[in-house]
Image (cartoon, rainbow, N blue to C red):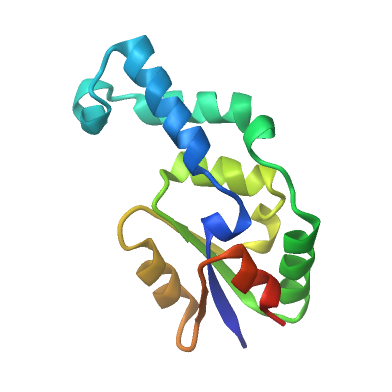
Length: 137
C-alpha cells in the first residue's frame, strides 16, 4: 500500500489566519504572543473560536487538489498531513478545505513531518507544495 505525507500548506495556507489571530491577541489581550502559554493559558480555545468564525474567508476549496485527494484515497493510498500550525488551526483548515475525510493521520508542531512519516510506515512520499501534489498520480 502506498502512502503520502502532505504539508498542510500544499492544501491551503494557514499562515495569514495565524498572523491575523496573533495580531488580534496582541491587541485585544495585550499579551506577548511569544509567551502565549504563560500569558494567555486558554489561547488554543480563543484561536479555535477566531479561526472557526473566519475560516470561510481564508480557506477556499481547490477543485484540482480535491480531485487528487479523492484519487489517492480511491487508489488505496494512505494520506497523512503535517504542519507547524497549532492543531486547532490545522483541524479547522482541513475541514474547510474539504480534506479532512481523506486524511488518516494529522500531526502538528515541531517534528510533525517525521511523526506522520513514521505513522504511515516505510516508503512514504513527502509532498511539500501544491505543485508537487498536483503532479502525483
